[in-house]
Image (cartoon, rainbow, N blue to C red; front, side, top):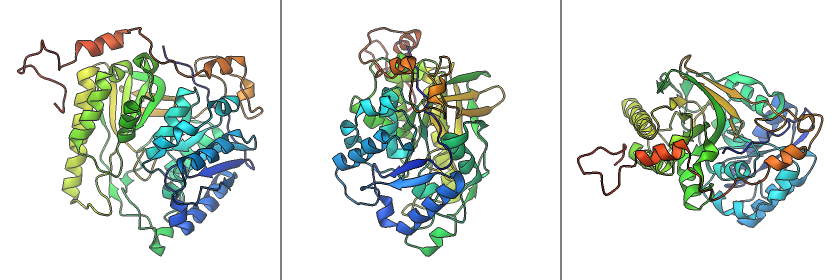
Length: 414
């Protein structure tokens, strides 16, 4: 059974927010971009950014980065925690985090990419966060903050609206090199975007989200940092996106197939896959090649989900994750994927426990949680032996058993 999530209270203008580097300390490499991001964050939200010892320190040990996270979560004056950027070793930071601190005073954490590690850890503690919001990528560079990013960032931190996720119509995979002064005033090369692809039944699914960067999700499962019982995702919405590593579509298919074998694809009610990056500073395919790579990933994602869960509503191409303009989406909070209207709605509201009566003390007026919230903040259970209809469905469709002949089809990516 899915555990209720506490949706932390919102900040108010004048409150302090922590700006940390739990993975790569990008502000040490490009301080001017970082400083512009801090000014824009304050101008956009009225919040006061507070840096910690490792925010601008390259090569900080995992324990020291965890110390900064623990300090920020423990400080009652800090009302949200934002990551400057991702990286590739945050998985080593998570074992040093203190769960009692975050349960005592839940506050939102914003990040994506490698920050999937901290978001997932908070999720296992029953605390919702937000997927997106890298200050170094989405606030600092360019002539301004993109409108969709500004709106969803404010909703996540301050206002708590339920927002219709719209297509901005253009996208960039990478911005200007931070060493180039133009990075402070110019966007990267942007191209027009394709319409989102929809598949599955024409119905609306509203559920709590989980997922993140597909490569990191694979690490989490390998490290045993996800509950054994797939029913914790029962009826939820899986968010998946790929990083600037530009993994091929077949590798995404392999990762998603593993999620299917764990029973996760059959547990969720909907899947939202982001528009993938297809270029980097080192890899510059032609526009037709980039379109072909996105189409290949789209097809693999849809085919793999439908193999394990033909009842899931699927949308591919949503502008979250490694893309700009970027939407900030709830992580553990609620998203509606409407296959009939072909709309996606993100609920950034706050207060109380998901699935229970609202608690005023989880709102702006208070900073804690009541007894019901404390009960919900028990860690997600490990090792349940119960088998839901979703788990049975996954078992039914497994293709690699001795009884299945070589001629019988398997899931995409085989």
